Image (tube, rainbow, N blue to C red; front, side):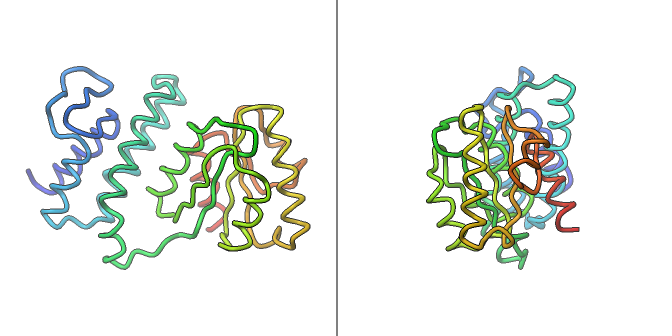
Length: 227
């Protein structure tokens, strides 16, 4: 296969949600054929520019996945499968991107707030951010406010992402914003929030910089912030 054909196959398999050859995919009949991991390894052996793999093989197909999700052709598990493809590919590509001199777009700390164990949406956002070139520090789920504040103080990230799926836990985001203000950190970091019960109105209410309904909007929001 030519380099272009390998990239096209990577993109196709991202849309199918096939990480490895044993995965079946969104459609039937692909089990046993090379998945994203095998194809990325082949592309690297052929000395394909890792930036091309990221842009054409990962980022563009994930935009298609996002469109399918918007049209309700894909459900959350389908989108998560595609995001896992991107995550696996980025694990392989990261050392090569560093060698190529590709600079990080900035550190992004992300977590689900205290009292909330839901992390699927947060995980998808984290994977997409890695694919978009951000250095992601994922603190996990049910993260105490004090730890979030301390991480911002220590790491000095330009971006902080907060997730919550419960109306009871989303209010913790307000406590975090107050903590950042109290510690003199608020003006050092852009805060993006997300999760089913949150909204643009709630973001304004607590003083966050943006509300993102999903991973794709998070990427677009960051592009606007850094333009």
